[in-house]
Length: 246
Length: 214
Image (cartoon, rainbow over all chains, first blue to last red; front, side, top):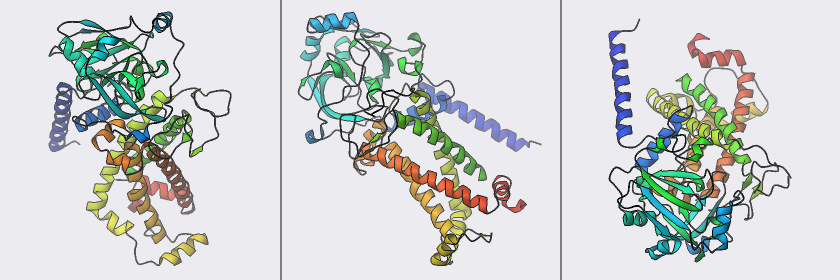
């Protein structure tokens, strides 16, 4: 027999969980890939780390710790469009910013380089287990977004590589984070093509796969369901976590 | 509270399988902050990898299963941490730690000799070797596992940088995480052998139903 007290406690517990879920939803603590078998783990990790890392900076290292040479992970063979850009020295490369912005704009590599540069010596951690430390130089994504005006309803930045089916997204807190860069330089030189040149998103508080190479477009949105299978990025479609702060 | 034992058991196997699967993508281990296929490893497990970029000496790669392995690994880790917290609170407030795990006045040397002679346990309370082992696992290996796991997280270490720097870097954390896996697996094997010797069915039943029911 279930006593009335147990029934009340169960009801209170269920209501409490319901309220907690709603609060988490409105405060943006639920990741887009919260469904499915591992949704609980994804949600706990994203929610907890979002609260813990609200004002944190990725660890930075002394120059002496820079990995020489950096490790360029393998990429699929370049498509013809990329090869054309490569042959012309990326002079016509465009990074277009659109979606929930006041004035959409396309930036050339030179336009991005004209913004105030930011450098940090941070570690790139691959989900496979390997890492390297490098000095990354670029424009803060926040400055690029400032130039086009972020609309208040924007919640996520979705970014795309010139290579097919390579795209990812981060929440606005990560997009406006001072270490999140549109990177064009590495260790004092140009960003090598193998590492992601001419332009690579650099998100140092998350695993390497969030730092998409060869970016051509950033779009701001309030709803990730509109992209791909609605899981936030290509990674969850391939079975990986959307949030990669681990 | 016996439930936390079995939840932990389940999590341990999920973590072990998914952890080994993740290791296959880069079966090289380093010491210090950074390490990759271009750096000198501390050691390398002589197995093929699930990634073509790893210099393993094998001409083929294994299928990549990291996606679900990682998700299972972290979800099991959360579950294990919750079970561990419950067990810890119970252990403190019920007096279980004080009564059953803090070494009693049994002579350590005598107990070690009895173990080495493979004498059958006389039942009753945990002996002193058992107590010390359990304490090391519960308050040493488990916390070290969680710590080295978190020290590999770029987000967690952005909030708590000392968790990685105190260990000497992210790759050191990964290597220790791997060593602790071995220590815990060794504990599990010895634990099961000991339970076997103490009467497997009786002990397992006691661990499922209740201590008093035997």
